[in-house]
Image (cartoon, rainbow, N blue to C red; front, top):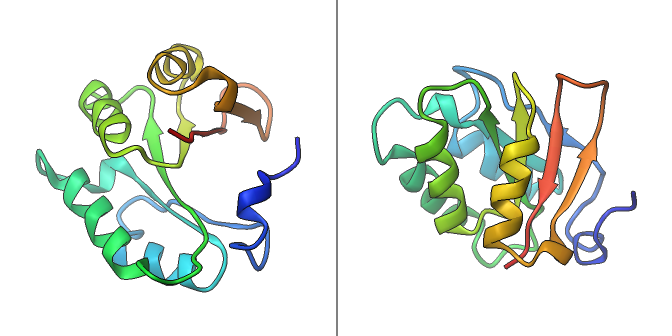
Length: 138
């Protein structure tokens, strides 16, 4: 499936700066986005309740005004905090979600219920059980 047309002017290269556990954070993600590639981090890097919203706000502030690439958050499907993390991404209207470690089927259904289902796309990048990306636009 082709990239969304509105991203074409925001991306220099169609790349994702990998969401690295214990490594990726707001500064790295914002730098990647300002450089024209999708920056990503795992929600699991946020260790305290409420920190995910703070990180999202920090990234948005850092890339505000720039023609920056989108950023993504990796939801670990088998995480104990999945429900809270998913609720945060929906509340914050995050543009791109990556899922790993489990089937994203129920997440895609829940996201489609919150967003215009016609604007929700799911891309399987590699065989089942690995990553799926969902693009959401409110």
